[in-house]
Every structure is written in structure tokens, then in C-alpha cells.
Length: 159
Length: 77
Image (cartoon, rainbow over all chains, first blue to last red; front, side, top):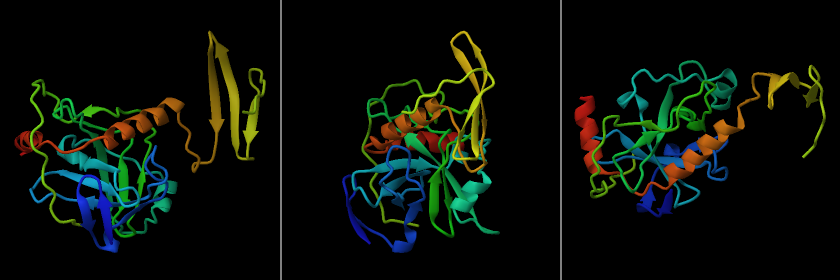
């Protein structure tokens, strides 16, 4: 499938790579289909690009990179929603906010992680029962204010 | 919006299986007890508002700063 995006221009990907959100990301109920875009460099950041709205994309990351003790409880009904069967692998990632004024002050939303069933390609943003921050600093000791540098070029889409 | 008046200990039933009871009223605060099937998600309004607000902010991200990535690389390796 080919789509036109505001950040990356035209991109092409295999239909099987697409993720379908069972109830959209909170605040964006009409965008339910996404594709994960990777960079050509070995970095933990990826883009979650909406297939339905070219201008909508989120930066996502495996929380294990900055918070190894982060655990997500997926309720039984949520597992059912994702079509989870025995042996399925669930991937968890968090959505990052990168403020344009000071891009090094990246924060991660720990209260609303996204879970994906790798087999069924169904995904969901969870709202965890325990109260966590939506603004967890990814670089806790970051105090310097340096200007943003060049955006990272996008490589081919990868599953 | 449907408006109902309830006394302490009284409740309302929503769609047969969801029950909300007034447990305590003190100093402008109301304590509610909620009985609902596990499939019904119950959260304080603020939690939804907080996530929605953060999602909107996250969607405004234009690009990924490379310097920050490299810093993180050294921090985690």
C-alpha cells in the first residue's frame, strides 16, 4: 500500500505490516490503521504513522531502553480484544513527546502504553489502572538547552 | 445529561450490570463505589484527559533529534 505523509512524503509498505487499533489512540478515534516506520540507524525510536491521516504520526519506543522495571498489566478482556491466543507475542511500546523548543526533554507516556499482538496485528492504547505519569523524562539528568539538530532521515519501512 | 438526586447509601444502576453507590459525602467530596463487570473500564476523568492531552502533544512532534539519540545510546549501552 502507498500513502502520502506530511513528514516522510510518499511511503510504501506491505499490507501485512499494518497495525489495526481496535479503538484508536485516545483523541484520534478515526485513525485506526497505522504502520511502524524504522530508521536506517540503530536507534530505539520508531514512528507510528497513521495510514488514514497522513499528517498524524507518533514517535514510539520500547520502554525497556530507559525504564527496565516498567511492567504493563493487560486485562483479560483487552487480551481478547487483541485476539491473543496461546503462544502469541505481545509487544509493548510507549508514545514519546518531543517538545520542539527543547527536543532533548523527551518524555514518555507510561500511563497510556500501546500493546500490539504481533500475530494478529491488532493494537490498542491501554489506560493502566495504576496511576503513572504521562510525562516520564527519558533523559532524567538532561539540563542543557541545546538547539535541535538535523532530523533523522527515514529509511525503508520495516515490519 | 440525566440528573438524579441520591442520598447516602443509595445508588444507580446502569445497563443492568453497572452499579454506582454513594458511600460517603463529606466536605464537598463524594465517595462512590462502583460495581461493574471486568470488561467495563472505570477511570477518573482526569486520567482520560491526561492521556488525551499527552497524545495531542505527542502528535505534534515534527522530527527526532539525533543528538538526543546518541546520548541515549551511550546512557543505555
